[in-house]
Image 1: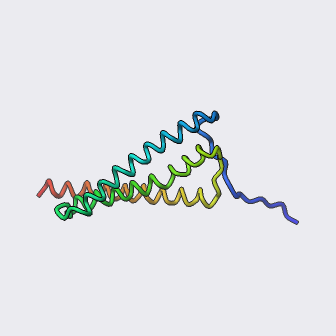
Image 2: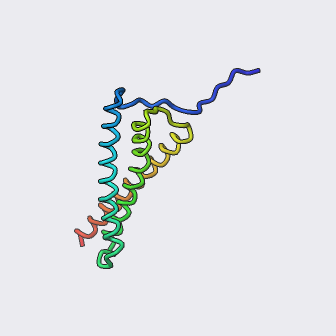
Image 3: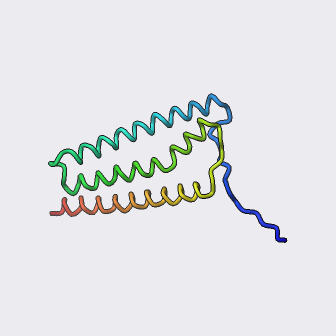
Length: 126
């Protein structure tokens, strides 16, 4: 018989210990999250609906908005749920998925910003 243990969940640090501050955290992050969703959604809708905006610069802007939505939706809802329900745990698979997706979206955003800056450099030089 061997002594084994496996990690099934992680305990997260809370922003605040009092319930009122946890609710304030939830509503503050909810407002910021909804504003970001609305702003990025309006950008995406405007670019998709207006055919005059189907140029490379707006294509990059559309992809940047999609990546921003992805990176924002990776971590913020779990933080809001933990504040609302007064829980502090995340499963090992959930944590791994959050880290993978967040790193993926951030690196894709970095590469996209690099391509956008190179595109602007070429446009200015020509």
